[in-house]
Image (cartoon, rainbow, N blue to C red; front, side):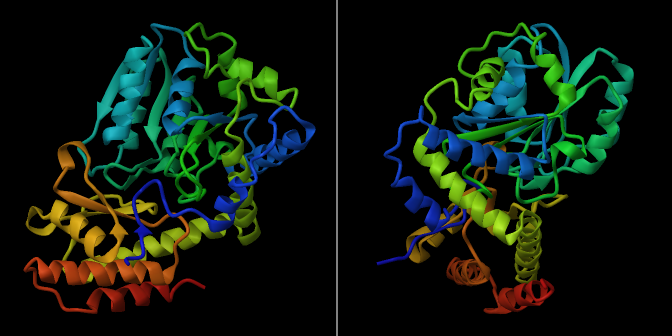
Amino acid sequence: MIKKRLFTPGPVSAYPPSLQAALDANIHHRTSDFKEILTSVIDALRRIFGEPAEMFLLTSSGSGAMEAAVTNFFSPGEEVLIASCGKFGERWIELANKFQLKATVLKFPYGDPVNPDDVRKALRENKNLRAVFVQACESSTAVQNDMDELTRVVRDTESILIADAVTGLGTMSISVKDGIDVMVSGSQKALMIPPGLAMIGISEKAWKRVEASTAPRFYFDLRAAKKSWDQGQTPFTPATSLILSLRESLRAIEESGFQNLIRITENRARATRAGLNAIGLEIFAKRPANAMTGVVAPGGDADKITSRLKQKFGLQVAGGQGELKGKIFRISHMGYIDHFDTLGVLSALELTLLELGHKVELGKSLVEFQKVYAELK
């Protein structure tokens, strides 16, 4: 029997009390009892999103919130800027095209972050741009964008900043109050519950666009969501079991401190990269994310590495996507994991590389991991 350990960039290892809470989902969603639960969840989300003017919980994956961010703030033919540095940035492009927005695209090589100066230049050259779309963290390449600088670039323009924070929330310091106008996220990452819920926090500046938008929408119509939420309801049947799960996870996160979660994740990421560097492995991203680390597979052995980690050690890490398939593998730093779990990943990786014929000094990655981890107070 092999114990399974989940180290993919999503879904992640779930918080056990959250999974247990989902079993108590024998509750009707149009009752005062559920209204109280939903209200507590929305209030907690408001706090970790940075007190947005409007906060919504959607029954969908994070991609549903991305679609809502495209369909609720614009009319067909309006001009937007998309800064893409990976596969999920490209999803913004697909959505913009599907809903007939006129997109100017700044495309950066896989592994590179978005360059804020290029965004600044594009905004100066085209005053008709209504929004900038970006990833807080591009999980396909394990790149973390400079959201502090991007918010400064967009803040004093007519554009709104729309950020995919599905992987960024809870792993880096970002919020609506710091200048993100539309921030979307999902349940299966740092919030430590299964997939199926998406969240969207909206600034006052962005909410003014909603009533003027003529783009078609139905299930993801935020006007309908607001009308229902003013009555403490959702416009459609919510995922009650997942909302009960989320309540438990949010309780635990807030009790230990939301900023503390980010701090621990950042330390785990740095410690892991120190360990990987110690055994000669190359980090793929030029601006590495806290949420996960992308590793260049020696000898192009990414598929063999991920397969053997799973089969021999029960460790599920992720391979590369798109043009990176077979070239990199990605180790998550999110979810219900701890110091010893990550040491286990590095230990298993050393043994796997040795088995595949690569030169490895056993234990070296563990020593370097410990040194950085010890900095966490």
